[in-house]
Figure 1: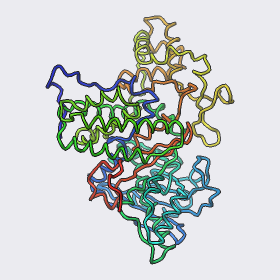
Figure 2: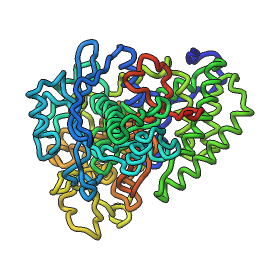
Figure 3: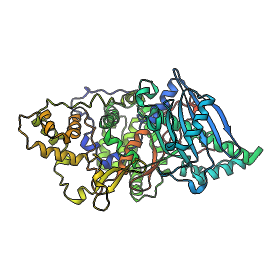
Length: 570
């Protein structure tokens, strides 16, 4: 494995990390792809490295596919169990909306191995989701609905002794689609502080990702079980190569969007890990032959992936068309570029900035990291944050110093005229019905008086105006004593000094703001693929598609499963 060298040639303009002005724009955040440091991939690497063992310990499912099952993950220090409940859901009750009250399947991740008494308690509460109550013995709560078309097709084919149609499997990508995966204290589940010292939970969303990973196994087991009762002796199971082409779907709406705004330090950690990984690869002096071959092989698989990525949303359709052109251009360029030249990856990335769309540039970033696990994988261990440690405001800073920070870091915000309707067209609020974040149209809808403080650009501009009226010798503490309404923005500005990727550098209440850009950014760090916006406010994705199943973990050593295989299953 090559390693970065920084002093070989003083004439080389070594790449620094990309500027926050480049990275933290909504258009780019909304074009992110999964990478080696994404949470799903980091989780599976850990499970494999620590030799986790998996077992289906309970299976109480009847011929119609109704009942419960338990899947236990045995780790070096602790065990966790997915408790899955399968239901008989009438078609008219099937909905991906958060206001749904019934689902095809409901789940919780149990801390340890549940007893019969635990199962009874969970059976009375987990299917109710928000209307039920779980305890700190549970680490997550989730629910899912079937992809009706693919589910029926797979049951029919397996029952007849045939394999499902590969094209249809690839087109849909999953048998079930989660509509929420809750953790960190929601609805009675264990608060994060109770489990944050555990190695598995040390990374962000590891518990939720483990739940989804085991849910995928349950979905395949359940469809094979139903097919076996329909077809009897003729029924078959899904072939292993085809089985891996099934992931878990997810429908994500506005509830996820404010997370990135409300957790600036955590956002910085995520972005910084990715940007540090890119910087390290761009500093690789000479790529080995195996690294070059790995990149070229994955580039071919990315082309397959783009062909399998479908969307009906006009914006994403246009981005996919651009991405297909970008991949063609990248393949043609790589065919003639000497990847064995010094700093070839840096040269390739610089070429992409001039020749590819933002979507294509971010796809290349993901690809460039692939051959360099030894160089970048350890960065995934530093993607958590103790946000309380960064919460304190430095009241001893001078107003002059704070004004300078605002000019340097919030130049994109302080000169915007927020009196114009297009610059303040939206407002964020929390719905009364489901206590979920929503976006309202300020000049068309009621409710602006309940606006949440997510308008960071406007808040920065208001802070700037307030500070210009202060005495130059004044301290931040003095200013906040008289103007406490600016505390939250002062804290954000001071965070920027140490954490440059902590702020999204766009107007989050503008008329042209797209919430799906926020959703895609967060989901890319989960490791999601095949983003399919259904509007500007919610998106469908696929998770763990092509990943090894638990029983294959010891045999599957490659960590490039996020891209479809180059060979079709037989």
